[in-house]
Every structure is written in C-alpha cells, then in structure tokens.
Image (cartoon, rainbow, N blue to C red):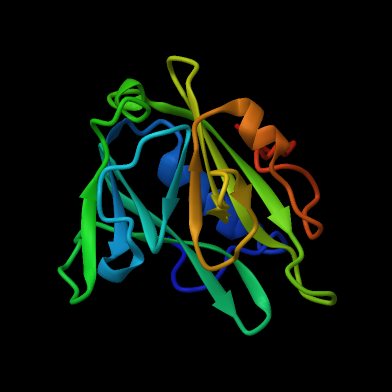
Amino acid sequence: MILDMPVLRSDHKQAVSLREALVGRSLETVVYRQTEHGGLTGVPDGLCHEVDLDVVLRLSTGGVGLTWDRDDLVEGISVSAADQMSSTKGVINVDVGQTPHWRPLLGQPIRSVSLGWQTSEEGCPESLWSVRLDVGTGGSVVIALGELDGDARPSYFPDGLLVIFAESIARSYSHLGTDGTAWADDALAR
C-alpha cells in the first residue's frame, strides 16, 4: 500500500496497488477525519462533502485512507492502509456511512476505480487529484482535492478533499493543472 506521498502517474505500481486494494472489495462504512477547529464536525448533507483530513473507506478486507498530501511542490492524494484509526488530539472521526448519499453504496463491491491526474506546478510530475469509485449497483462517488466555495460549489484547494456524489458536478469540476475533470475518465480503469 502507498504511504505518505502523493500517488504519481509515472509510478505505475502505485496506481495498480490502489486499484488492487479497492476493486472487488465491498464497502462497509465510511469515516471522514476532520479537525475540531475546521467547523466540519457534523454529518454533512448535500451532493458535495468537504473533508479536512482523510476519507477512510472501511472495506470487507480492511481500511483504506485517502488524504491530501504534499511532497515539496507536488500536491496530490496519497493512499494508505487505515486498519486502525487512532484518536488524535484535535481530530474527530465523523461516521458518514449512513448518510443518504453513502448508504446506497454500502455493501456493494467496488467494480472499478478511475484516476484523475494533475500537474501541481510547472516541471512537477503528474499526481493524483481525483479518484472515482464505481460500485456494483451502478452508483459512483468521486474523491478529489478541493473545498466548497461560498456558494457550495467545488473549488480547487490542494489542502482539503471533496466527496462528490453527482456525476454532473464531478464532470464540471476541473482546474488549470488537470488533464480532465474530477470524474476521472482515465483509460486504465478496470
């Protein structure tokens, strides 16, 4: 499993590892790790959720955490095993598995994972900025770098995550450094 660095497009093993950790596994529950001072301590509603720190997917085989990360000028999403969620001062775990948008995805196997790439700064390697999970029922969810602006619309911000449940919103969300939208129409999805 990948640890503590943004996933790079040039490192094919990282993308394969991410897909192998998710595809075919059933989604059991989801936890957003939020900072206590960030104001996002309640269960969110709406078609986009803002997450301060991590999105932890509890799967039939263990946990996978997705978080925003930085390695010098390279900004992106990193992925790690999340079998234990220890208590950390100033961080709360918000169980969102029973929200109206996550509930239909629970118990479903993840059938494909699509990856979206960006260049965070000129001269930097391409890094992961969005992940789309498609589940057995035909439902999808996108996890991407970003935050919600004052009108509750996705806006690029590399130090936060968005969870997007509407295909139309994910397909319209992009920024200058990407090679596509957050919907992540990569050709390597399986």
